[in-house]
Structures are given as C-alpha cells and as structure tokens.
Length: 477
Image (cartoon, rainbow, N blue to C red; front, side):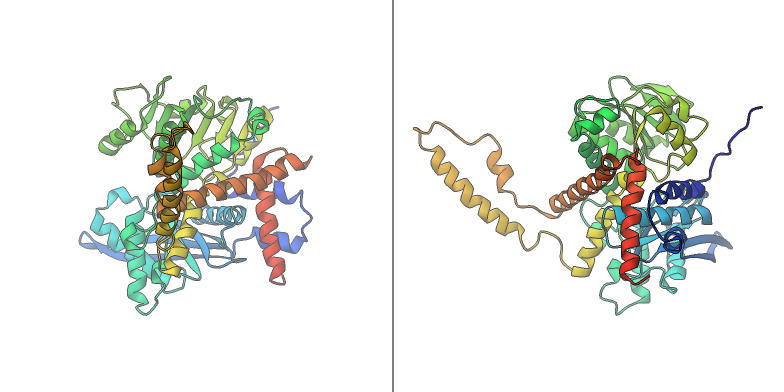
C-alpha cells in the first residue's frame, strides 16, 4: 500500500525547518515558543476610487519579532499575498537579520494586487492609501517598522511611501528613514537596486573560497566556467546572472521565465535576454538560444549551479528528485519546500539557504537607513583625504621608478585605480562583501564544527536563532 505525503505549505516549511534547528538546541520551551510565533499581523481593507468606482483592496503587515527594533521587511504586490505567506516571510526576515547581524527584528507586508493591471497614477493612489493605513498605526516608522521593496514593488513605490509618511509627519527630521530602497534623489543609497543580486554573487564567491565546501557539492576549482541556470530574471535574478557572468566568468546556460525558458550550452547574453523580456514580456521569440515552453523542466537540466530567484516553492516534492544541480543557491525566499529539502539533502545536494543567500537586500537597506539617520552620504568626509594620501604614495613611487638603475615602472592603469578614493558605491559594496563573508563563516563553523549538523540551512538557523535568543535573554526574558 502506497502513501502520499502532502506538500508542506510555505508557512509549514519555515516551521519545519525551525523545528529541525531547535531540536539541536537547549532552549527553554517558553523561549523557543516566543521566538517561533509571529507577534502581530495587521490586516487592512481600504477603498480607492478608480475608473469611476470604489475598489477595495486587502493588505497585510506582519511583525514576527521585536527582539531588536525597528523591525524590517519588504512590501510585495501580488495576487498570491495572504496572511500565512506574509507571516512566514516575516519569520525569515527575523532569522535573516540575525544571521547577517543587522540590528532589526523581522517584519513583512503585502498587498493582494496584480500591479500590471493598473497604470502608474492608479498605483500611486493605491500605494499612498496603503501607506497611510499602515503609518497611522506606526507600522511604517523610522524607529519602529521600516519597509523595503519586494516582489512587484521597487524604488518608485518606496518613494511614494516615504513621501506619504513625510506628509503625515511634517516635523520628523528622520522621515526619509521610514522606508529603504528609495531612488537616490529621494534619500536612497548607491548600490541598493543591485544589492540582493550582488549579495548572491558574494555568497558564491565566499563558498568557492573553501575547497572543502566545494568538494562537498561534488564540484572543483573556482567559479569560472561553471554552468548556471537562473529561474526568474527579475531584479534579483538579473543582477546575480549579470555579475556572475561578467565578473566571475560563469556561463548562464539556462534562464527560466513565466512563459518558458531559454537554454544555450555556451552561455546566454544576460543583458540581451533582459532587454528582450523588458520589451516583449517574456523569453519567447528570443533568437539566441533554444526556447523550451515548459520552463519548469529546465530546473532539472544538467548544470553546476541552480539559482531559483523568483517565487517560493518552485522546487518541491514533485520535481526535487529530478533536479541534477549539485549546488543550489536560494536567491528567492523559500524556493525549496521542506519536503523537497529533505529529498535534496538525501541526494547530497548542497543548498546555500535563502536567509543567507538573499540577505544582500536587507544589508544594504541597513546602510541606507543609517545614511538617512546620519543625514550624510557615505564617503563624503573621507574620500578626498584618502585620495590625497594615495597621491603622496604615487608621487614617491613615480620618483623611484624614474631611477633607471632600479629598472622597474608602475603597471599600466595602476595610478588611476589606486588614486581613486572610495565613494558611496565602493563603500556599500565593500560593506556588503564583508557582511556576506562574515555570515558565511559563522554558518560554516557550525556546519563543520558539529557532528549533528549536516547542511548549511540548519547551520544558518542555529546561528540566527541563537542570536535572537541571546537578545531576548539580554532583555530579561
């Protein structure tokens, strides 16, 4: 007699993975439950007059943990938004912030809407009303709850939210810090748009610095020449694919989108595919590469690294056994269900978990929040000082290189590269790289240092939950 195991929901997957980790910890039952549960979820239903009639929308803002404040987490626009999803994402934000040591609790928001069905003016009216409903309850506030972009939202929506908050709080000097992911001319920070994708690149670079870890994934060597399949060429997938192909010499052999997939064994031109999707709405019809209508099958294609960068649950119990990639990087939130995770672990697949792999966004959001509170852009005070010090060194080197008896000269381009002081973008990338390296090393120590930990996901949960528990204990709980 055969039995079928039900596929766990996204919320259940997060709970199951949490349970796997806390089973290896010595937490008092009360503290374990305090960390597990979602503190509060606010549901708002509001009306907006559009196209001659009132339309009613449903939105959510969930606060999972206030062990540190403000709480932090994106706002997504999708018809799939519901309370369970928002609460699961808020929990992941708690653990993610703890893992990369950004001083935030976890939160998440969502609006049940298909943004493609509305024009820009209509979306602005909807966004401003949603922001008003949240801000008047302090669910948007620089020191209490700080949203950011997520699926279906971006710089434009964050600028509208920041302006709406400022209109409601005209004397708040820190109003710009009420939300991150804003455009540069509205208080944003250089490098925020690329941050999550750049973080994926830095995560892989750090993984490949450890030959023992690479061997665990049945791979060898460095990133150059590795075949990568990317599922979802939105903001995260596009930047991850772009940087990995341009900076690290990887081959993007497969790109999966909602209307199908493209494959090319010699590597696809990420920029060209991205432009095609922007103008045609999908990958169908793109000339360079083989088009496969059933894009899901490309998840099962032979490759070295698989990067799911769109929706949760794309790798599940129905297809996990067929996934051939020895290394999976979760650029999306929850792309692998708990059931699929178990199947993949039994196969020996190494998974770089979502709470680490896509933490670049919240890391650079933290930098933006600090910038808004300090009211000065990074690099403004020290950049020219650094440049002047570099000039002194270059001048001395040039004096020495003029001595023919020494027989040496400066390498081509060295002077220009070295003299440049670090501006905001360079400092943001440096801070993000350092964060991703440090966080990986904290996971790796647990992964290799404990006999009862066999994968990076459990290691990540152990590090994150331990830090949250320490915060609660420090508060006297």
